[in-house]
Length: 341
Ligand code: FES
Ligand code: CO
Image (cartoon, helix red, strand yellow):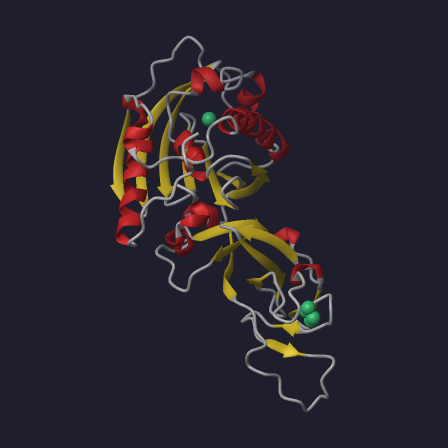
């Protein structure tokens, strides 16, 4: 499925960057599903997103500045508000009317969990994933990763629900090399994607024992995972000592070659129990193990089940492909693929 060729994917919310990257006077650029965006903070401090192309002579608006809550083009200084309307043309006399055609496309843009989210259509099919734990003031939210990976979002999502890769990809972190038989799992399709429940025995390297407050070399993770169609997931891990470590990951589709990986975690312990830097360091190791493999896979992930071979533990990925196929069908689209080479 080539993500930029399936318009229905524009009907979902995607996180694009941490809010901390938006400075009061400097816009940022981001490419979502091939659409170049200029993103900035308006005068109310709300993130705003419009097409990154001025309607005058096509200069990149994101190279301009933020001024009076609007974005000002670096070429001739036209200013645009969060609705994409041109509200100031410095070359005009003050009383001159600005033509209504002076405008650029504007997109839905919101802040949630400390990140900027964008939806390219006016009718999102699902809300931004509701993560109650991330809004619970008794928990802490730790921003982890924000970086570009050269892999497809669906590869990333099915990897996150794949119990069969731990003893290989994660042999140096939490995987058990001696136990390649994957833990059993229970999956339920839901409107926004799927829910998976599983219990996975894992290895605890010394640093991870400190992070978890567990002094044993192995332990049992109880996982409840939700896939939010098309490219977000939560993994809520509960350990036997009551520690909860919830990971949110998005593989926001940039283009047909790359995804922006955005990850944060939420924990019910404190900085004194486990420093955020140590938690990030362990999840970093795990994430880089996945990155090395995922970037070696074909970017274009086929939805047709006949295109690749499967084993029983691939049920979550198979269900994702079926649900995305159904989504395309409901939208009247056919899957667009790269020609086989
Ligand atoms: Fe933007 Fe001229 S190109 S104001
Ligand atoms: Co993995």
